[in-house]
Image (cartoon, rainbow, N blue to C red):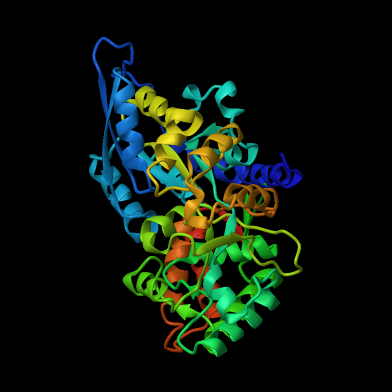
Length: 440
């Protein structure tokens, strides 16, 4: 386990005090109508969107008689999934178990939408996960979700076209810009990558990698700063790439983005460990043409942020907490669970449970990447995740406002820096509205 994981844990612990005042409204499930003794199957509902989820549910149902899981695929969180979950909770018809990414968990906890599951997560289970993943799901001294994966950044590139254009795989962001210029010069219709205006989390991962710290809890006060030197540097860098037409500006996973990859109009993808499965599922005809490299860094030394990463939480009104957590633990801590997901051919999940990574690597068909050991790339990236990032309790507000601003960048209506600043101001306003002490 790398020192940076431990340092990150310490940073997250500092957020617990400020969040503690928010967690009193969260539900605490006792599973009163929840029996998994085998006398009668307990039926639970599960909403998610991660690749391979249906295959995991099918494998669980085939191997368990005491619990039956009904799965419904919903849009990914920022594409409408979180709104669907929130609306279902408010209407009183939410599923038992939901997928929530680390950045959004504090928001759902603060809204009282999920249950405290501390009584169902024993120390022997929690020690299977990276301490950092446990800390990200522990708020106010209580456990609110079962962590699933870590999500270090990675750079995916068309090795055949990099070779054709004589482009070296960039190790620094300066080299990335030079590579982008070379790609455009070699083929005026080609670009090295994409800025995602609809996905603030990708930008946040870049800021995290650069050493930014947007949220910091000291005592009962939240300190918010999205205009620090690291973030300012990242914003200016990406603004320059857009201004000089060196990267595309397409919504993430949109038809435009996909078609550009298919045509060779875009030859790189700055994503995360789970992105390997996205490419294999989206572009199966390009098998053997892609490779994975570490994310470029500012000084050439290994550095990564986290882009997403999933947890499983029990909604506040579920009376089947025990069964829901048992299913979540099976998905996240057993070889059968991880193999079922990755054998689907669409998932490249990097488990938070370190002991499952060999099974994940074995289950993943690396043919698409020419037999490359992509899990070693993820392992190295995971060890380099920056130590000082924490998520605040109003990520939904922050991201909505930044996303709106990013959408105006293409037509010159705003800059990236403008959007990030607007996100800062909206976040401070929202936290004050909630009665929290804020500096920023």
